[in-house]
Image (cartoon, rainbow, N blue to C red; front, side, top):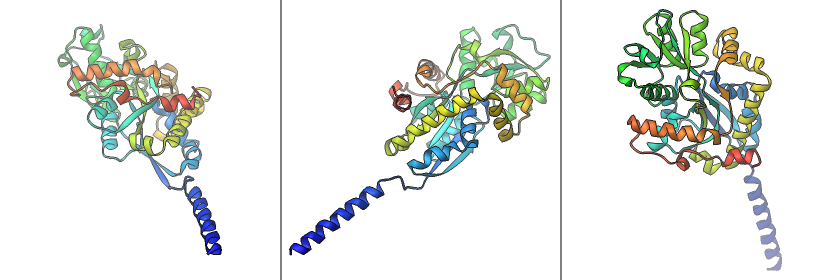
Length: 326
């Protein structure tokens, strides 16, 4: 009996030890990241190109990272609602509508502020917002950053958005429409305005930072499931994003080449865009909270959402604060 008891105790120790081993990351997680082909989200591309996503996240059980490109934020959030994305680099406005509509996700870091521009065809004269009445302007779909900023700016300047023919398009279609003379102007994130300018198909007349100073643009959104089940992984995602953002500032020429290679854009256009845009790459989500809540108010007034989500519903800044040691 005594020998049997000793055997049982040893067996329990072995099982306990095995239990400890299985708690180490061994889940073979495939992380699915959504992004858009804009210099706003260049940090995501740098992290992928340098191999940091997989290298940094492997200790947390990630064995593969898959990227999915979207033309704008609304369809990207639809994919997240469908459970097809774990992480999204996306404009700050689309998650508001998605979260208000039931998306289980949080904004965990900032990505950039400002960075879009209204470009008009060469034969169109700009004399302030009122001069846009009757013009056709291509921009991202309703609920996007560009749609929200444009309509807010028009209303604040006494122009009903219905007086402007606002056409929802992705960046490629909008630039093509400008080149073909099918629209009078476009309001798009960089580098699209620079593409239009350098092709002499239009000129930037107003930057989004003039329309709304220091407004939040893109954010890093993570699914609630990932936050609850793998909080350490989420913290490392934020750390890698911070590292990539700082690398863009330290190595702008390399970052421009990475973006140009991945998107097949002309390098000179990308460099021109990065030097002349009014945007700023960031990682701190705290600076985006005031304008994000203003987005929510504007989208509620535009009837894009049926209720106002709270700051707590939209943000979880704890991962950024931990990553920064705050």
